[in-house]
Image (cartoon, rainbow, N blue to C red; front, side, top):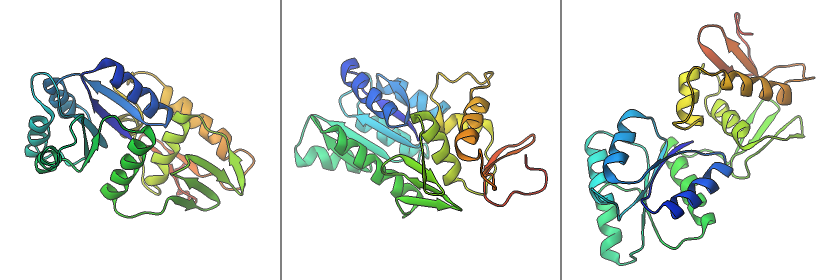
Length: 229
């Protein structure tokens, strides 16, 4: 999941971003309304966390503008105000959910998980492909009953591949959803992480799950096709 975090208080933004990255989210930061609109126009995001009190344009204006542009990703609004009218204003501007500061970080994560499930439709927390088991709530994986130790970024990449089971995903798609704006498109970091996942998931197995489609990208499937490596 790639998240746009719009928060002008640098200490709060740093705290949230650090926690999200530890949970395998890719996070881009925006410190005001103008920057938020620009970031959303040039990048692809799965979720937006949007503070109400922002310089230049407040969160309500940003939310309305995003929706008017056809931006469909879920938006979670943050505010220090807990009045009913404030919550109503946020939801009426196009937000999907509302969280009042201060909040417990566990609640933020739970709300983000709920929004992501709502975006793609109801799906089970545990995903199974052949003998690969992925628990999206606990961020853990196993194959043939054997736990697979993954870093946060390895897990994020594996989850993206699993959610796109049977579909070829290119490097650009992977970069947009698994890495943040600091990603260097000329680097081979995606290939490196794919190699790590293969070593952890496919090594010693009779069936490989991660395949390369030459000139196109990667595909996770138990049924490899002709031309897959």
